[in-house]
Length: 126
Image (cartoon, rainbow, N blue to C red; front, side, top):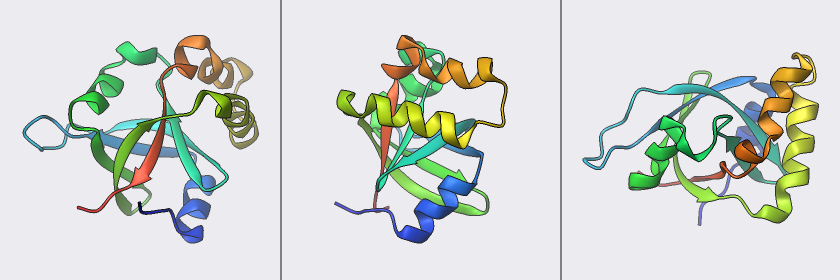
């Protein structure tokens, strides 16, 4: 399985907003959504604030693939459910990275609904 390079992890860590496009059943990309991404160890995580019913999250379920846009870079990714035991570390990463934002906005990434819609992004070959 592919892994993120240290440079890629630094880029994701220092970029506040990323864009994520999921793949449709026919393999084409949906329009990207702007979201927050955090790095915990050597893994990248995203959360759907509106939970598993969020349209972009549902889009991760059809092909389990997509494209992550970070600045001018694009990464092909696969979506994996985040291990539940990493929830506290992911919460801490969101609090740390986005501490300059309003508390209410950051807290929206830590609701039970958002936590259950946490995905690990895995680099994927095209």
